Amino acid sequence: MARTIVGILRGGTSSEYALSLKTGAAMLAALPEERYETRDIFIDKSGMWHLRGTPATPARALAQVDVVLNALHGGAGEDGTVQRILDRAGVPYAGSRAFPAGLSLNKVNARELLEERKIAMPRGVAFHLREKMNTHDMAREVFAQFAPPYVVKPGSEGASYGIRIAATIVELPDAIGDVLDAYAAALVEEYLAGEDVEVGIIEQFRGEDVYALPPVHVHKPVGARFIESTHHEEGSLRHTVPSNFTREEKQAIADLARAAHKALGLAHFSQASLRLTRRGPYLLEMDSIPGLYQGAALPPALEAVGSSTREFLEHAINLARRA
Image (cartoon, rainbow, N blue to C red; front, side, top):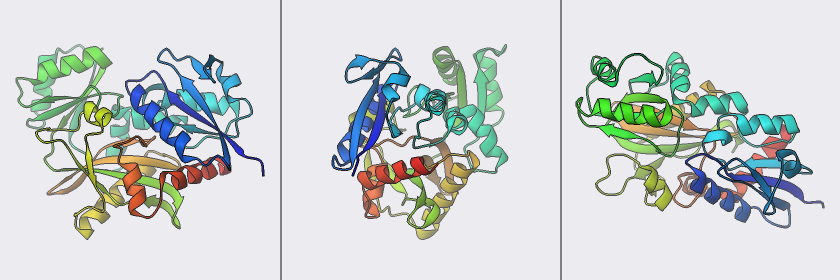
């Protein structure tokens, strides 16, 4: 039987470059050689595509590929750019289409839609570099709506890159300014005390149209106030799954993750980051390409239901080829 040729995209131009390399390596290692011929398609930090170590156009790199697995976290890998390249090439690929992927990466636009759909989220205010008000006026606008501490996020970044914490209103103008200068858009959210949770979503899995894996309780290193980008890079996060959350809490978490996945129009799979508070779960963000690197939440969640990275990838390949 002929093997399926699977192109695996990894690397890329975003700040999540190193994590993308690791997720791509996990994909390459998980697929059995007797069934799949894998092609490691590397995209360097300048955006140049490479096949077998040689620069290549996307069309050449994708020639004769049966299906693509996208391990490009953030940037062009999730903002719709790569998805449009794959659409033009006519190559089936696992994951969300261009518009929903880009929408989920853009925290400001995603928040607007999710709020319309009544998805529970921390209160937030968005600012752009083009705005005429200064950062002190921005801070006062936020303070008029909710009290500190504040979480200041870039408009389109993942894995906690670029996040600032402002413990007081005095610290907020500088935090907003730092994020605006670096990313041109800033989202200021209220800091909600609670437990960090990750939930993987898989479509057409285990007999369900939209299946929610068991919630993963994410434990930060001692002394950390929030999950930082270095925690992902160093693999210093700990995961408890099955968690010790109550049955009602687990159900509320799963319902919220599924609702957000559907609201954004995501496809095949996604991952929800939430904060479980005394008032229930709140969505922090949706990721259209879950990490499979060491220290990511999806692999232990798969293992908790008797699955594996291999089964997940083979299922994703089948979803892509049926799309």
